[in-house]
Amino acid sequence: MAAVETRSQRVSGDRQSSPRPSVWGALSALGYGLTEPWPQRGAFVPFVVSASYAIVGLWQGLRFIVAGTVIAGLTPAGFFLLPAHFAVSMAASAAAR
Image (cartoon, rainbow, N blue to C red; front, side):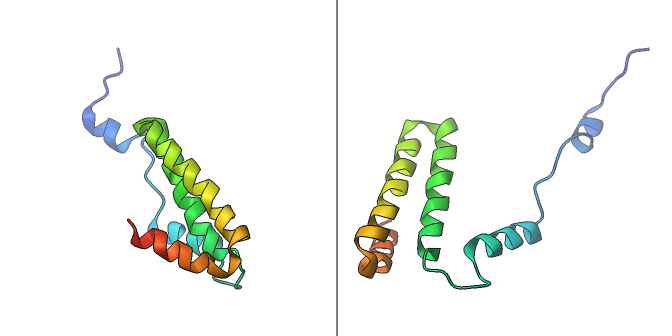
């Protein structure tokens, strides 16, 4: 007899659910460095955003990959070339959106 798979079996069967919000919270707390202050914390979020843009660009098109690359390039440039004004430049780029 052939195996018959119904819709309800497929939905509740082999699908993987996304991680719980507590897992995302723990990962972001670890990544953001809430346990100890570090000077590069201001550059962490733009790098996460740029990586997200690049990953989305794999499906949505080249413009997202270019945007992620530009953000990833400008972040260390601002961090190392304008260290006294890095926070202001990040705030200005966020306000420009």
